[in-house]
Amino acid sequence: MTAWWARFGVGLITVLLMPRTALACELPTGWTSMKSEADASMRAALSQAEASIQVGQPFAIDIAVCALGTVEAIKVDAMMPRHRHGMNYTPKITRVSSNRFRADPLLFHMPGLWRITMKAYRAGKPVHFSLDMSVK
Amino acid sequence: MMLSRPVHVVALVLICLGGSTSAASAEQGRQSSSSILFSDKEITKIKRHGPWPPPLKRDPSNKVSGNVGAIKFGRALFFDRHLSKNGQVSCATCHRESRGWTDGVAISKAAGTAVHRNTQSLLDVRFNRWFGWGGQADNLWAQSIRPIIAPTEMGMTARQVVQLVRRDQVLLKHYREVFGGAASFDDAEGALANIGKALAAFQETLVSKRTPFDDFRDALAARAWKAAGRYPVSAQRGAKIFVGRGRCGVCHFGPRFTTGEFHDAGVPYFIARGKVDSGRFDGVKAVKQGPWNLASRHNDDPKKSGAWASRQVVRLHRNFGEFRIPTLRNLAKTAPYMHNGSLPTLERVVRHYSEINMERLHSDGEQILKPLKLSDGEISDLVSFLKTLSALN
Image (tube, rainbow over all chains, first blue to last red; front, side):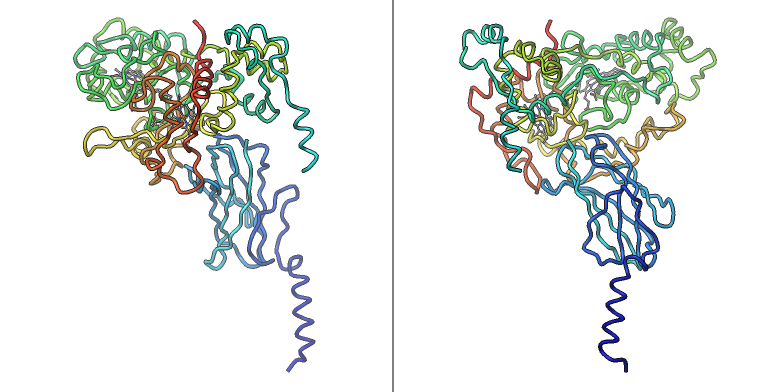
């Protein structure tokens, strides 16, 4: 039986170190982090800058995912939260490397606030990410 | 946050300074209303509706796009009545230049049987991503083949079209010159694609002229307030409603006043008892199956660069009753309006938006379209604005 403080101590150290040591990769600098309800065991970032998106024009995004464990696949979509409608197109996802994906095309067909949503599947279960962008 | 307010007020601009005489005369002495204030935000939104014309690029899917011989051949085909089964109908029967390349009627009966949609203008058609009210084609040449073989329009078969071109000495000469002496007629689908491409080359030349709005927009962009003040004052007030409270610019976006996509604008889509025009819903299906779409072998672009659209577009339940957001350029010549030609005047269109029937619209989230409850004055201002989106002459 380990003493409670020893177990607590090990747990604390694990939690403190996890984001740095456990995630097998680092997110590219200059990319925008996606928001997630998830734990520190998975993080994601997106390449596309808001300012470069034009209403009605298709664009591709690159997504980097760093996770504890393997991410088998991702799904990408976008919607306008205020109008509750999505895109008219589904992006094709290609895996660029072990932790990079490309979604092509996305198309924001109206000016206003859009939310890009991403589900990253680990052991068959999705972890949800999102990023809001306003296009003019 | 607090700081941005005063800055904003300072940024207000008196448009009619120095321009008040011409503005006043346009308004028949309504001096008091000749100075319209535009905020920076409004100016930014107005600027987005230009510049005009946009750059003209050749169509990579059409090997004869921009080719002088093809434009001539296309023109000859466009006005040729032999291209119809009864020998009475040419493209120009429904697309008349004097009416902005439309026909002025709600629904055409030119071919005997009524089609169920209003004839679209061909001005600026080269800039489209989708063609037809339902977006049933993803390129101009495919859309140009459609009426020739549509039973309710020109009613030909692919074979008959090929026979016509082979037997008509003038058309055959054109065809050989543009597509080469060896071009075979055995592949009727391919020959029809070529005919569509020549028709497309001609229609690419139909680009609309600059309008009073474009001069106003450019003057605002250059902060040339005096020049901007020459724009009619009622149209200035209309422009404010268009980019502001009316939220028209959300859908009628950019230099062409359309995002190029599809919406339900509350126009009924019943064709006859128990029959509906499902609009974009059928359009998506048609474009995906179309033998001449950009994913087909008839696309001359080795990279098939435009094919993503028909491949990746999804067919959604909400597409039912959605129609392509029309351009608002050249409205002065293209009445009646809407996909079924049901509204005869621009005033009726604006009243439609002012009193829009919410029960007809199917959408859950925050409504983009809501009854605007415009006053009579505001309605005429918005109409004045819409009229300035057509060239003078």
